[in-house]
Image 1 (cartoon, rainbow, N blue to C red):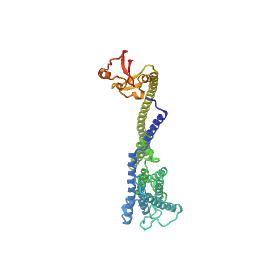
Image 2: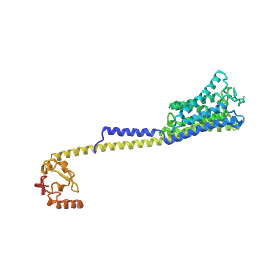
Image 3: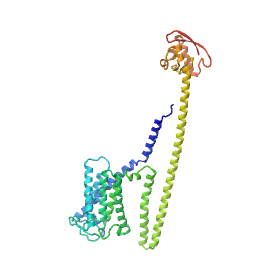
Image 4: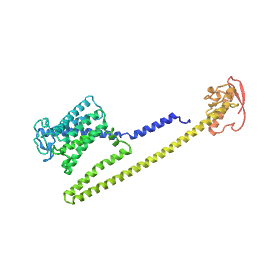
Length: 432
């Protein structure tokens, strides 16, 4: 066994790096699930827009405002969600026809243009005449102009349109930033409805964001993030590293615990169970305790991960030491074999080795001089065909058979003179 060369060591190192790199890559199963969920979310957003458009077309009030007293989702908003949902669905990974990216980009541009013009109206105080094209929206409360989507809605739709365009150009990180900002806007509006904070879903005197509009923004943003879950910033969430595992376990609780704690605290406050100062102290305590528990649990998990990693590193170090010891032993054995080979080749006496079947396994230069056969001709050949006289072949075979049965040879440990023959056929007497 020969020691490994430097090239082989580099090859082993390259394999190790590849394995470590592969271990840090996103989980393929999780990425596929999120991608499918993103496609479903995109279809839900598009279907939401279609349902609201149906409500406007047939004057089904419950479809346009969800509940009496709440603001409606505008016609332009519903049409935009229908388009942006379809655009997001067309950007899903998998077999993609050439027309799909073009259609998705076209829909995104139209939505972005509509949202941008709406923001321009708010910025300049102008009315461009596209807010209420069919005159279906007669609502004057919680709106600055009938049919006009809120500034927060227009801003979110512009971000979602930009997200689709950026994904189509593989600018995944920036697309995920856009989607995260849009998600934040929609989530703030939902929290505003839950906690009764009007300023979170209405900007000044302008149109309010409807509750189902905010929900659609959140779903569309999550769908955009999920469609390319294996890339960009979301790739950290889906990775096999300790960071990815901790984020997946900690992030939902970090989001839900403050919301649930705040909701419970507000509910008690509304029912007069305590005053605002006690409510604030209670909420702060709930969040602090929940945060401490989460940190403790995740710290324990990280400790286990570190212990397993330390054990793996110790095992790897022990294996490396064993490999180095093996290589050193192999090098020493190879040197011993080379030395023995030189001794045999330079010996004055003939040296012949054979196996239990009688085939020659070694043959030195002195043996060539004595018997005439070269080493290449002799090795692998039956000894009886080379140097054993024909009349001695039966005895030779009997001796081999006895050796195979008992492990004892007839001439072991003693010097005897035996007849032999040269390559040219003349007889020789040799000492063994």
